[in-house]
Image (cartoon, rainbow, N blue to C red):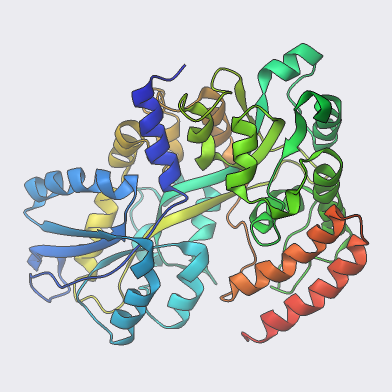
Amino acid sequence: MFTSQRTRRLAAGLAGASALALALTACAGGTSGGDAADVTEITVVAANSPWVEGLKTLATTYKDETGVTVNIEAYGNEQLNDNYKVKLNASSSDFDVMAFQVQDVMREFSRNGWLADMTDYVTSDAEWNWEDFQPAARDAVTLDGTVYGVPVMTERQIVYYRADLLEAAGLAVPKTLADLEKAIATLHNPDGGVYGIAMRGSRVPLVTQLSSFLYSYGADFQDKDGNASIDTPEAVKAIEFYGDLLSQYGPPGVTNMGWVEASALFAQGKAAFYIDADSQAYTFLDPANSSVVDTVGFAQFPEGPAGSKFYNIVPQTVGINEFSKKKDAAWAFIKWATNQENTTWLLANETVPGARLSAWEDDAAVANFPAGLVEIVRNVADHGVGHDRPRLEQVAAAREIVGGPVITAIEGGNASDAAASANTQFQDLLDSEK
């Protein structure tokens, strides 16, 4: 069992993957030439996160090794996109390395020409080894064949369960979605104060968690050509499955629940299962906030008709400002900070859930993580999908649309008709960006 210190470190590492924020400030000195050997100073703008805290320590080492001063500026979420847009609209070269949230801004920033093309950088050094990064993470930072960043934190959907309840009922940990439904139905006991499952049921928040159900049924938000596809037979079955779980075995008022409310129920011991991001593991491992510290288990997302396919996203990546006059120096630092040695150090010392496969294979480095979670991550290469929401710039509007059919399913309506209507609206939104 975790010590309180380890729990706090895990909390910082995993919670940071869900609470990232960026902003920009003043410029750094140094030469303006593109030759990395001529540069004495670079500026990194990053999120307030465990990764950037670890980076502050690594930056000292980097200066000792190279003589290059690394100025790190980290800020809160409120300043994130507004400050980027002000600086980058003005083609500012005040900063060199820029951290950003892939699924929220990468499409907009790349369209505006604000992100440097890093494809040649990441593929040109066999020793640094781009192939060592999780396939889904590499996919997440790649758009239309162009790589725009290096993933530094990852997050995936998993199953949390009450091991004591499964054991008492003689149930194995579900390996398939069909087994999951049977276990949830068996353990659903509202009169005894335990619901079969707690999960996001609020219209917009639920969309990211629906994603793994879609993938495991052989569906997605969009097809391979980028067109809306939430009305396919496979998508409708996934939507109905998600809705049925919550309508039949979820708590009252589930359509008003996001992750905060749903995870609280599980932490209080009032749900047998909870399915959401692994960044929430700390919630259930902190004795001050959880009554299931000694009974919580972690399992890979179950197999559906298309197998076990779950999101493995990148909540923070580091790229290069297209307007920087020190791109080569920026890449030299990114390459160093994300090499195998430093990624493993961050995993071990700052519990930063990085994207390198080799780091997760280091038993000493993962000692602060639950064994069940480590096993899931070690197997992620065959199962991970690099997005957990529709892929377009107007993602907030898309989530509002896509969540509608699930609400219909939860409330017992015709999910197929709702999906068909929503698909038309979603396609209109996609077409507006062409």
